[in-house]
Length: 510
Image (cartoon, rainbow, N blue to C red):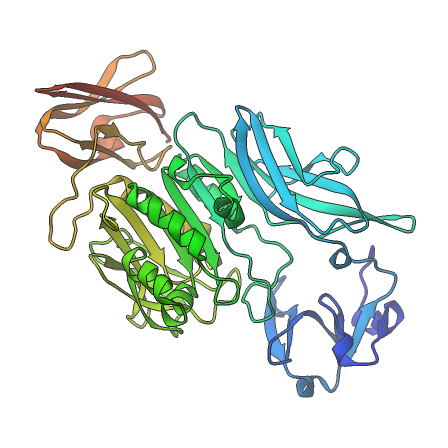
């Protein structure tokens, strides 16, 4: 509709339904002076609506029984061909096929579809058309990528009379360039029944993760969980996995047996696995079979307590990876049944709900019969429902630090490293502080220095003998008089059996 209308003009631009049961998402629930728009019918038959909250441009979501709406009429807008009637694609992957080439694929009901529109964005908010329906007629495509970071979404297109109708956008996925080992974002959130919390036509949750990982100087690719199941991607090729489970539950399976097997193998090979979701414990531990319960206890390292935490805010637990965070969730979409969980098998609690019960666990140690050290962070609520991006990013950055740093087990013994390595500092760029972490498989003399772009040494951070282990150094600008610009930091290790040198780049902002 190209004009603005008052509520008194609604009868002229809408037609009243014969029955409330005819209402579709986006239709109007109207009386003179007020309009509500239907979001969906809930499992108990009530109407979930969106309406003005009378506070500026804010809106509110409410649920009403039919008996609450006796002064309203159900209506549809005239002469509107809706995107809801055009098959919506489901984006499955955004991965690097070759250097500079991104592989995109999706599924879609192709009935009456004449092609697809591929949209791309550099920041996840401003979108431009990359390919139109004339150039893109198949459900997979390789597309050139000259940008360091890029996000994608797909719309299908059909012809309706003389009109061209575009569908609702698919879920969004992103990718960033890197010659280093990447992490993988897995979109495992496919629940779309009326009982689910998210009722939108598509979601951008993986973009939130992509932006947070980019802020942490961590490269990434994105796939649907179906691409993990069919082995299009191999989990063991990625340094870290960030798995979005949303409120996937018993009907959709939070983790299928195949997914469990692949995640077990990944953790046993020393991988770092992050997952958040509100129904994982309910599905696997409360309703699952023996295999589900074993996976939940021994690989997610958790004990399911109850289905509803009765709180919508969490805070970090002292001496955990999340000790410095506190935030609300359930804002991006309503989350009404977050699980309550306790740690087990060597894990520790990292987050607790406002009422003190367990909201998340972390673990660093061996899995199964493996001797490799894997790492896990499991949050029992959907992290993507956090509206404050800075707090969301903080959780992701803390997770990366945990995955790269030494964390004591419940016995107080540090897990032994398996090689020499220097990690990317975090945050980067930074001001006023950043953390540099590294690991030594054997003791020796350690030198950690900073150089400018001309190769001049500007600071010595460490110059001493250290034993095998994992180490962190918190660099403060004020202690070394570093001006804004690009620097290199170099770790040099000399041991009785040989040496190790690695250099990385960092940026100081002022």
